[in-house]
Length: 357
Image 1 (cartoon, helix red, strand yellow):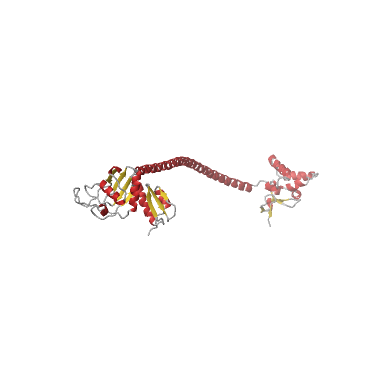
Image 2 (spheres, helix red, strand yellow):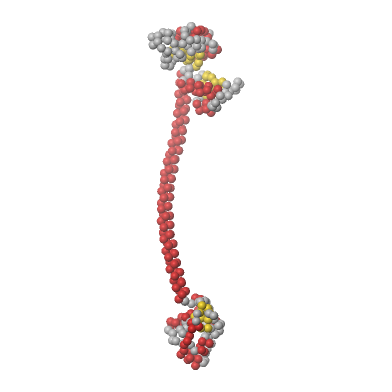
């Protein structure tokens, strides 16, 4: 049955490699307790040998037996001063340092191997740290570049926002200018009346036609009351050429009359609205028997606005849509307040488009 060394805790294979403490009966390798060869020790020395642990605990006994000292001295192989110093330090330091700290060749080999592995691990860690540092540096550079690009983008966005605000302001100004221009253009037409449905002939006398119409509706006019009377729009003829007196338009151009005084125009327009059955035969104009309509003269924008308003009112619950003093008005039901429509935006907001069929 083998024993274990109390110093290194390894198995002692042969008795020639061990020595036993006389005090604690612990077995040790010879090399662990700095004994050169156990065979050269006398039986008395081996029987009285104590381990460094026991020697450090109990005071060393003073041996008076000179023969025993001589025998021990003669039987132990001379050791060097360095070995004695190691033994002395071992004995003195035993209380604070356990026996397991005694140098062992195998332990040192294992320790050296572990140190080499540790160095390799540290080298690998350093390599990885260098790679990580390089990667972080590149990432930092890219982040700096992205931050620079972001700042430039924010600057551009700020400029775009400023220009957008400027554009919106300019659009509002343009819209106001258009409304003002439209109002002025409409105000310029305040003395004019547009008459639709009168058959058109070559060599006709528009002033005479207007005076006849005024006579029929009960508002007699003199030639001096009129500023001018003319047809407006491109000519639309069925055939016969410009010299054909009998050529009649499918849809004759409207007559426009401008009065010198506003009150005469208003009176003429008011009476014309009450005589809705007036036709070409009543004023002795040859051709198709078309109904004659008297309306306020509108600018092109207001005419388009009026047409859009009439179309939207048909399917949006608004029963009334009319023109008064050049402005477009709508009313949902009888008794409801009239709503003035100034532009397309207001028309879309106030009068919803009819649902698709």
